[in-house]
View 1 (tube, rainbow, N blue to C red):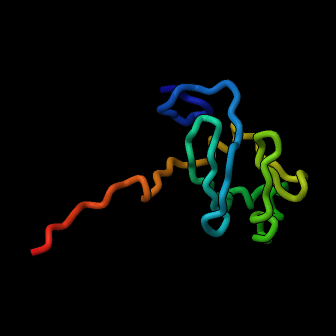
View 2 (view 1 turned 180 degrees about the horizontal axis):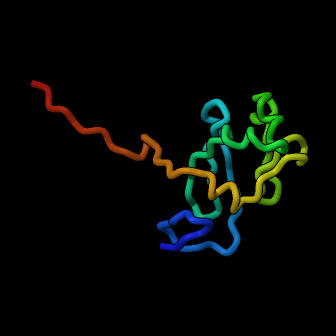
Length: 107
Protein backbone atom coordinates (compact mmCIF):
# COMPACT_ATOMS: atom_id res chain seq x y z
CA UNK A 1 0.00 0.00 0.00
CA UNK A 2 1.17 3.55 -0.73
CA UNK A 3 -0.11 7.13 -0.69
CA UNK A 4 0.11 9.65 -3.56
CA UNK A 5 -1.44 13.12 -3.26
CA UNK A 6 -3.44 12.01 -0.23
CA UNK A 7 -4.94 8.98 -2.04
CA UNK A 8 -4.28 5.51 -0.65
CA UNK A 9 -3.54 2.83 -3.25
CA UNK A 10 -3.69 -0.88 -2.50
CA UNK A 11 -1.40 -1.95 -5.34
CA UNK A 12 2.31 -1.32 -5.69
CA UNK A 13 3.51 2.00 -7.10
CA UNK A 14 4.24 2.14 -10.83
CA UNK A 15 7.07 4.34 -12.07
CA UNK A 16 5.51 4.98 -15.45
CA UNK A 17 1.87 4.30 -16.23
CA UNK A 18 0.22 4.43 -19.66
CA UNK A 19 -3.32 4.28 -20.97
CA UNK A 20 -3.77 1.11 -23.02
CA UNK A 21 -7.47 1.34 -23.90
CA UNK A 22 -10.58 3.41 -23.18
CA UNK A 23 -14.28 3.06 -23.86
CA UNK A 24 -17.16 5.51 -23.34
CA UNK A 25 -19.78 3.98 -21.02
CA UNK A 26 -22.00 6.92 -20.08
CA UNK A 27 -22.28 10.71 -20.14
CA UNK A 28 -18.71 11.97 -19.46
CA UNK A 29 -17.74 8.53 -18.13
CA UNK A 30 -15.38 6.00 -19.59
CA UNK A 31 -13.62 2.80 -18.68
CA UNK A 32 -9.87 3.19 -18.93
CA UNK A 33 -7.43 0.30 -19.03
CA UNK A 34 -3.95 1.14 -17.77
CA UNK A 35 -0.59 -0.50 -18.36
CA UNK A 36 -0.94 -1.98 -14.86
CA UNK A 37 -3.69 -4.22 -16.27
CA UNK A 38 -6.35 -2.41 -14.24
CA UNK A 39 -9.56 -1.19 -15.84
CA UNK A 40 -10.92 1.78 -13.89
CA UNK A 41 -13.90 4.14 -14.19
CA UNK A 42 -13.18 7.76 -15.11
CA UNK A 43 -15.87 10.41 -14.53
CA UNK A 44 -14.82 13.60 -16.31
CA UNK A 45 -17.75 15.71 -15.09
CA UNK A 46 -15.67 17.25 -12.27
CA UNK A 47 -13.16 18.52 -14.84
CA UNK A 48 -15.69 20.89 -16.42
CA UNK A 49 -14.78 23.45 -13.76
CA UNK A 50 -11.35 23.91 -15.38
CA UNK A 51 -11.06 26.08 -18.50
CA UNK A 52 -8.96 23.58 -20.44
CA UNK A 53 -11.70 20.94 -20.09
CA UNK A 54 -14.70 23.23 -20.80
CA UNK A 55 -14.96 21.81 -24.37
CA UNK A 56 -16.19 18.57 -22.74
CA UNK A 57 -19.52 20.36 -22.25
CA UNK A 58 -19.97 19.39 -25.90
CA UNK A 59 -20.22 15.61 -25.49
CA UNK A 60 -19.04 15.08 -29.07
CA UNK A 61 -15.66 16.52 -28.04
CA UNK A 62 -15.41 14.18 -25.05
CA UNK A 63 -16.54 11.16 -27.04
CA UNK A 64 -13.95 11.81 -29.78
CA UNK A 65 -10.81 10.80 -27.89
CA UNK A 66 -7.65 9.01 -28.88
CA UNK A 67 -4.69 7.43 -27.13
CA UNK A 68 -1.36 8.91 -28.17
CA UNK A 69 1.73 7.14 -26.80
CA UNK A 70 -0.17 6.09 -23.66
CA UNK A 71 -1.84 9.47 -23.08
CA UNK A 72 -5.58 10.06 -23.42
CA UNK A 73 -6.15 13.06 -25.72
CA UNK A 74 -9.03 15.01 -27.26
CA UNK A 75 -9.43 17.73 -29.91
CA UNK A 76 -6.50 16.49 -32.02
CA UNK A 77 -4.19 16.60 -29.01
CA UNK A 78 -5.14 20.09 -27.85
CA UNK A 79 -6.59 18.56 -24.66
CA UNK A 80 -4.87 15.79 -22.73
CA UNK A 81 -4.48 14.44 -19.26
CA UNK A 82 -1.34 12.80 -17.92
CA UNK A 83 -1.84 9.09 -17.21
CA UNK A 84 -0.84 9.55 -13.56
CA UNK A 85 -3.35 12.37 -13.13
CA UNK A 86 -6.00 10.37 -14.94
CA UNK A 87 -5.34 7.34 -12.74
CA UNK A 88 -5.71 9.42 -9.60
CA UNK A 89 -9.15 10.57 -10.83
CA UNK A 90 -10.45 7.06 -11.53
CA UNK A 91 -12.38 4.60 -9.42
CA UNK A 92 -12.09 0.85 -8.95
CA UNK A 93 -14.26 -1.00 -11.43
CA UNK A 94 -15.26 -4.63 -11.59
CA UNK A 95 -17.17 -5.92 -14.55
CA UNK A 96 -20.35 -7.87 -13.88
CA UNK A 97 -19.25 -10.32 -16.57
CA UNK A 98 -16.47 -11.56 -14.28
CA UNK A 99 -18.94 -12.59 -11.60
CA UNK A 100 -20.73 -15.89 -11.72
CA UNK A 101 -24.44 -15.94 -11.25
CA UNK A 102 -25.84 -18.13 -8.47
CA UNK A 103 -27.57 -21.24 -9.71
CA UNK A 104 -31.16 -21.80 -8.75
CA UNK A 105 -32.58 -25.24 -8.33
CA UNK A 106 -35.91 -25.64 -10.10
CA UNK A 107 -38.46 -28.07 -8.75
